[in-house]
Length: 144
Image 1: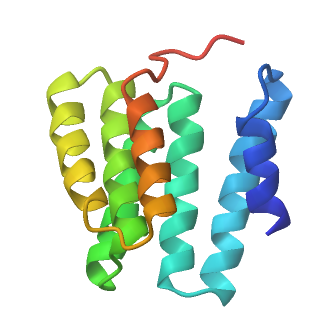
Image 2: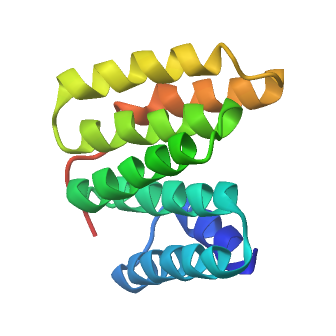
Image 3: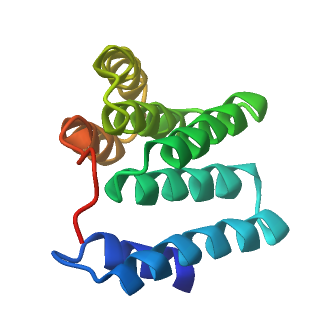
């Protein structure tokens, strides 16, 4: 949990150094690796999602797309729905926005909104929708 939460601390920082960006990438991957060793499929999906978010925030479309696709694959392969499935689609919307593919970003935004309608917990649904509202605002390049 320390690695996963450490990534969030860096993601929420108003400014980061290049070294902190590097730390954020490495921590996200280390967290995903460790959860892959001891966790469940949902832990692996959440780890892939976090990797995708990190790369999207850094404006790196290709790895953001790769990890977003893995998130969705894991959800589909293991029957993971609700909150995690909606966030997998949010990750795809965000990654496509970073890539400048507004058409696919719109498609995945619509799919994520639809998936959010099926989230049982209202707070979880609100969290997905709030994150989704920021997906199209992702930077296309990282300024450091």
